[in-house]
Amino acid sequence: MNIVLLGPPGAGKGTVAALLKKELDVPHISTGDIFRENIKNGTELGKKVESIMASGALVPDDVTVELVKDRLSKDDVKNGYILDGFPRTIAQAEALSFFADIDAAVCFVLSDEEIIKRLSGRRICKSTGKIYHIVSNPPKVDGIDDETGEPLIQRDDDKPEAIKHRLEVYQASTAPLIEYYSGKGLLKNIDASVSPEEVLASVVAALKA
Ligand code: AMP
Image (cartoon, rainbow, N blue to C red; front, side):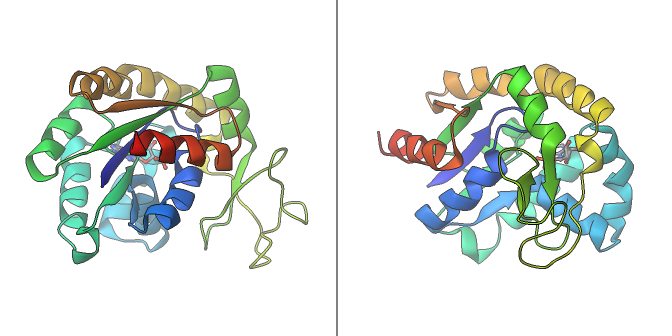
């Protein structure tokens, strides 16, 4: 099954995708994670996107589409995949339709107030990508990753100015995808205000329905 996860930043797509990946036994492809990995490794792509990402703006469509097209040409996606953070514009969705057959678009629904709370409290371990929240999912020791003992970081784009910009970008460029996939009969709305395990259960039920 080829699945697209839609919804605002901070709605829990990455967290739930990590659980859903195990449930469905298919790869979780996050364009944001791929860009962050490139920034960490100092690649040409990483250098190109670093300042764009830090501001909360979108990486140009052609760069992102090429990246996903390449990723979906690999063998491990034969039995399906979860796309997280892509497409993010109508142009990306249209490009995707030329090289992929999407079976479902799952939209994580969450209020702006809750999004801001989640994003501003989010902390991550840079080397493993593990996600924490200072209130709802804190590490055992304040500011330290449970497994590696490394200090947790706040993503540059989780800082207040960037959050504001990301929400504006979401409304302007990404929210229209809800209509786009609804028109194709593929949209499944999910209440994302509950725990990751509960969201996972709703997603699995919606995919079976
Ligand atoms: P995410 O981890 O999905 O929140 O993505 C973090 C950032 O990566 C976004 O704010 C964008 O700057 C960039 N990004 C990720 N996916 C895309 C995409 N499909 N199109 C454009 N930019 C993207």
